[in-house]
Figure 1 (tube, helix red, strand yellow):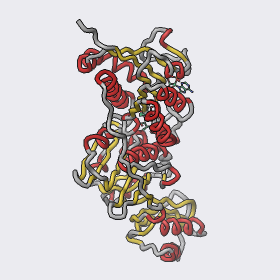
Figure 2 (cartoon, rainbow, N blue to C red):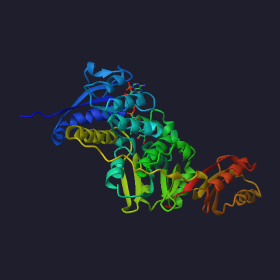
Figure 3 (cartoon, rainbow, N blue to C red):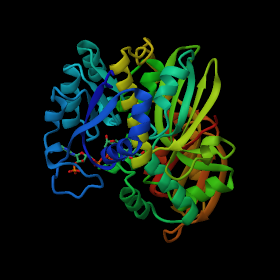
Figure 4 (tube, helix red, strand yellow):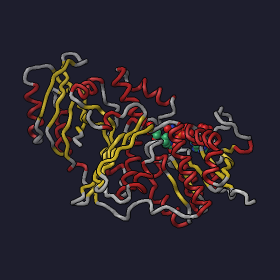
Length: 433
Ligand code: NDP
Ligand code: HSE
């Protein structure tokens, strides 16, 4: 009788995600191996601290502090890079690809910073690179874009790509808690990045938006070419205003392609999204992505966007795809379309806006504010005054009619300098999708 082939797997990084992958492969092994027609061997894993207590049990000889020794181990065919960051993770990824191995990655920061190098190294040396877990946790959005929706050109892809921020915003809204308290919980639950500022300042969402923009449009957009804003300035009055006016505030990635002029824009910012939209109702650690294609119309994907189990689900999906290719041969279509689009300058983007500013509660102040907006050609659509926590001050909550990013930036800069404005104004976009 013919014996089943063996696929040997090395796990670089046995933290939240790595342990999930190890645990769920052990649990699902009989079904996975039966479907694959091959044996899966969890050969070795690397960690930084050998003494740390783990949820999975390995023999001492299976553990190392040297992830490169796994990447270059001739007996290992599939290397999972689950360390994070862009230094040792890059070395591990490139070393394995240069040896023609298969690399499976959850590392959106690495892809955003070094995507072209990673893909060209894989092509040059016959390595394979899989990265489903890098965007939107357990949602198979990479597969959707590169396989199921391949016939489409994408007018708009937008949604929630960071579980930590959505968890924070949901709990702030529901329970009135301040964001640092909830962030601590998100860390304990394994949702946040090792450097949590990547989550709350919007960078993690920007890394993921860059990966999606590349997959959909063949164009790498760096974070320097995007508007990137996080959630740290949001307060309860903003969430209350949004709810009372039929919106939810969500940290959105927005990737838009003007199909007539063939230009692309990518932005990351907290926005007021009409509550009638499916994405506005995606809460807690869930991510939600709306993809509008010129043939398919709008499709929506919702699922857990962070945490051990959903991310392990995505990594294992890639391991099985990769193992199947190793056993049966074959490769995927090229990762992205062979297009390269020009970018719309961020200053030219247009939107309605929400502004919150604390002002001195004195006669004539509203006229001065209106003068600042009028000078930039920005038209006020609504204005409410609420009590401020600051003494002898009032809080103004404004919405504007549509104007350009350049106009609203000029307005905010003028307001911030004005003697009647106390502190930095908060600016949010209103997403009229
Ligand atoms: P963790 O911090 O939980 O795990 C990282 C692992 O890498 C640990 O085992 C750690 O060792 C090891 N490690 C860290 N630094 C080094 C180093 N310099 N040299 C060698 N080993 C090192 O991270 P996560 O599991 O949360 O994330 C891993 C990757 O997955 C990241 O790219 C992240 O962005 C991505 N990701 C995470 C998700 C999540 O929900 N957590 C979801 C989707 C993607 P030790 O255990 O000894 O400290
Ligand atoms: N820190 C990330 C998040 C992990 O919260 O979405 C998943 O990529």
